[in-house]
Length: 140
Image (cartoon, rainbow, N blue to C red):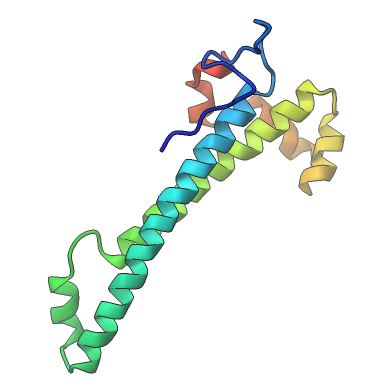
């Protein structure tokens, strides 16, 4: 499910036709929401698989047989997908928030205090956006 920004148009402009410095952040929040919903769906599947495996173990089946018969993706694969989705969304969010705060006039030092990191980390973050931010139409 793709969420829409109410503040901006699809082109990252305000309703007045000016570039919206918050458009990348709002897009990123939508992406994070989508990733979270996908993670919830995977987590539900993990819970179902756990219950199934517990029943199989309780019935005395060898784990090697259980795992071999388990449908793909395996639990470990679902967990990896969840971690990777959150890592990518978190990286994008850090950059988008730092960029939006910088556009509001905050210094790298002030942003660093808000994020609990060094000023150098914020400067590096702003200089090197994640790949998804470099290819996003709203950041050009």
